[in-house]
Image 1 (cartoon, helix red, strand yellow):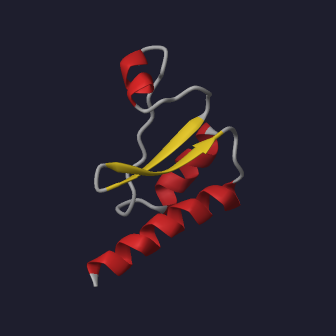
Image 2: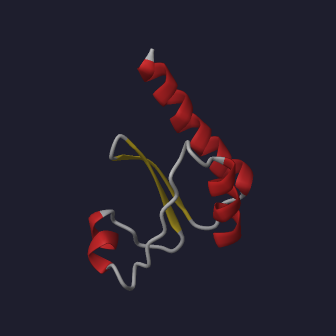
Length: 78
């Protein structure tokens, strides 16, 4: 997943911030967001989790989820 997420972080630079956390080193954070499996991708908007992807997902699925969130935010700005 790391190479894909790095590629996406470049593609969405300035639009989406990608952050990685090691759940073994940050168990409180994993607990706070109910992370039970790795990888888990949490997509936030305005500080709230708006989408969760558990397991290795393909690039098309991840991009679709990101675009849904971006699309929803653009409607809120109107």
